[in-house]
Image (tube, rainbow, N blue to C red; front, side, top):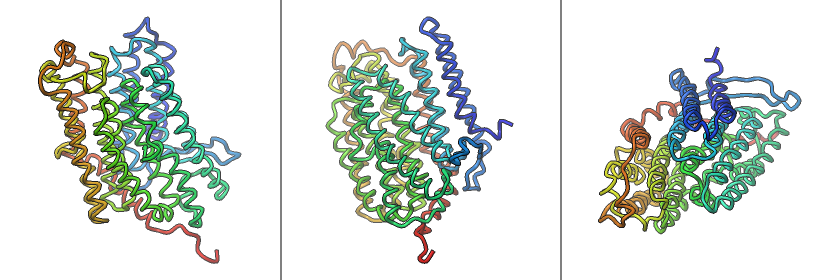
Length: 497
């Protein structure tokens, strides 16, 4: 019976676990609260594994579908389903939640139950976004997941947390309102909120362009694309480590996924028409934001800007409209999830010990924390796109697709291999190498067992995906081919009809 409701279990189990942690947990029962949260996150992770084991790789259609009436008066249904693009992102979400719970173990000492519950509930809501095949259901999940993240940054964040949360909330909310307008227009055209009905709707080009731009505002903020990216560095700097991990590893991917699920297949002619504009914005993100990362003094800000630059590859891969580019973009999303999570956790390890994220406060860390330095340098190399790590695979596939599309687009995209190496290795050199900078660095203790476990798991994922990317491309291949064939067929209304 549960096999028929895999997606519902994947969504509601972590939300239920979060509510139980809220009700039963407290700071007085700190250990019990942490173990309860860990049990909930592990149960939620195992609940998503059937999506991997029972997935039919030869089929591109939506699988594990569930449908039930929700608001019959407006033809709104509780409709779930996933394809090969959504499944890896759902697995990444449930996996990351386990990592975040373990990462907060000894670090969060106040309002532990609320902190753990926020991440569990957020995990369920984000899986809801990846699974929803009804526009209104999707919109409810999309807006609801902002609330736990808003609380995480606002309560456990840094000194400027109020400014960062308000900026984060306003940017994402304003973009989402335009998306709601697009959904209402599509509902009036079809009498339905079913996404699959929207795919069949022939619309004139001017209507498609307006719909695409409405979706673009919502999703570009979330990715975030230049020039609506400025909320992200502030949110990252103020967020606690767990908040930064989820923000970088999963929340940014919601924007990329939504382009593939909504903006592009609903308005395919507009997507082709505006592809030059989207490619230009992607290249600005890749090149300009990489240069901005070069001058950062705060490690978290540097990694935040590097995230924006790397997500530029995702949108570039989408708008080249090739199988290689699309699959490369999806691999890049998953890879970036692991690498950015690992890098923010590394900064968290240092911050927990020295309460500083400034590059200038460090130097010679390898002398006092050799084990930690080994992991940190591995993740930094992966961030630069070192062959053999997951960071190389997605970027290389997108650059290869870009070469076939246009040499100069590929040339500009490939500069990230230089700039990415520059800002990442520059940070590594100043933080880890050289003489021990000061007495604070001299007193640093190497990784404890909990920290070692987290970083070792992520290192295995980064190298595993780098050596064997078929783990992702097996999922995406048929779905990507089907998506591209849909995008190739014009949805303009036929004259005379």
